[in-house]
Image 1 (cartoon, helix red, strand yellow):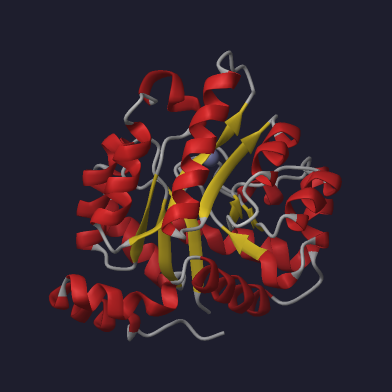
Image 2 (cartoon, rainbow, N blue to C red):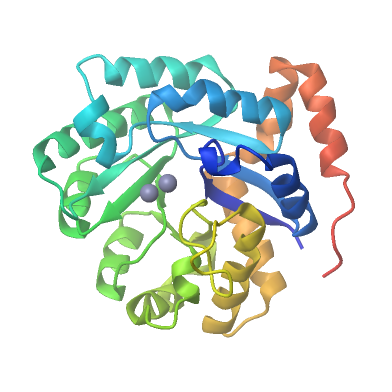
Length: 283
Ligand SMILES: [Zn+2]
Ligand SMILES: [Zn+2]
């Protein structure tokens, strides 16, 4: 079984001590690729160092809506665009989006979101969208960028909202939230997403799935998300794995990654080839 964790923050200090063991566990769980989300461009060099160490990690670059108050400046858009073009391992812009839970800077968040959508459009990269208590406005903003593809990450919206974003061509990524008993509206939402638009993620270190709820999350636990998704959609976990892995490769264009990586660094490409031949657990 091969899985892709499409949203991780393993640069956080939570993993300062044991990232190698965390990696061993994600390999054992069959996680073959990870998309590293970015909270502020200041994270980027640490993320690059992690990707040097673990070639299965691809990168995103952007400013999180909750960090716009502190980090969004006039030159931020240019900085993100420059970083995105500086490293061929960048496969997405984000995370960006809107988080109106307790937010006082909605206007500023919208401006930062629009700028990042424009970069995604210019560079033809998908965008990773964080959307909390903001579905209506997120939808209104996105409608102005019909050519932008992307994913609604850590999705917790109801079925009506899910339909809006599906209508815009977005992928929908489910996290550990779907393993929580009381997350009824997300359970309904995950049943209506077509299989070719489904993704899975941990959003680690946050939101560890049941039965690890409350603990530090990590990429290996994305297997619980896949399992619960299979139950809710009345299918088999290997089918969810195959479908979501295919979808992640398609959205983030991971198919061509070997060539891109080879041009960037032959030694990394060899490391990656070795990694990909790592024996996968049987279905
Ligand atoms: Zn997020
Ligand atoms: Zn995140």
